[in-house]
Amino acid sequence: MSNTPHELHEEFPEHAHKIAELKQKDAHFSRLYEEYHELNRAVHRAETNVEPVEELAEVEMRKKRGALKDELYRILSA
Image 1 (cartoon, rainbow, N blue to C red):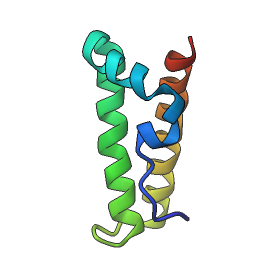
Image 2 (cartoon, rainbow, N blue to C red):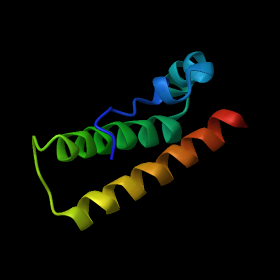
Image 3 (cartoon, rainbow, N blue to C red):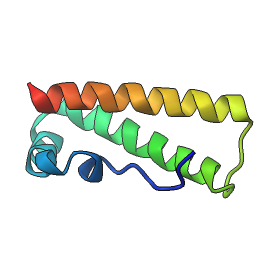
């Protein structure tokens, strides 16, 4: 378990410019980005026990965050 936030621009620094551009121009990407950001913060709060959740719930949040990150990367790589 990592207590480091997984900010998208830190996960994909080579795509930082494209992330900023797509957030402004692509409504689908923007929605996915916001969903990822909110979920990422929730996972971070759970991992640091700021807002503890049951282990299974935390695992499910991490899985969903991973799926969102994969989809965002697919869009960035297209």
